[in-house]
Length: 116
Image 1: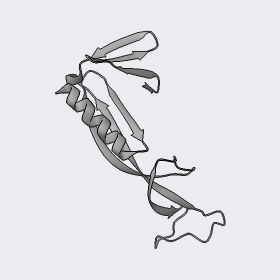
Image 2 (image 1 turned 135 degrees about the vertical axis):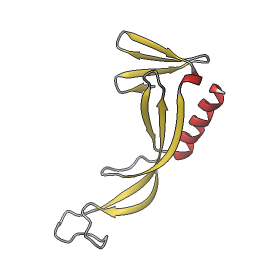
Image 3 (image 1 turned 180 degrees about the vertical axis):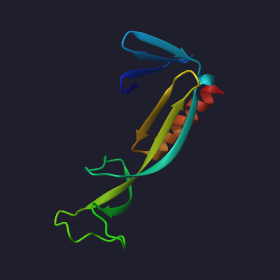
């Protein structure tokens, strides 16, 4: 999985992280895997598999409605995304956003089962 400047390789025995020519290895038990769902306002077209849970305006007035001072004030979708956090005391600190909440939750459950 390419994550920014690093690439994570999930092998059966360990997680390998490469950054340029540097390689580090972590046991699954050393890395904490956390899942949570998060609402995100999409400025662009949301991914086809994203769940749209609400709508908002680009510019909102005090009462929560559209601010009529702006003529380009369009409705924006609010999507529910899954967030996966990978953290360890040895330097792993990554967050992955996934447009399918269920897939992110299953992924974290699988990684937790491997580390158990």
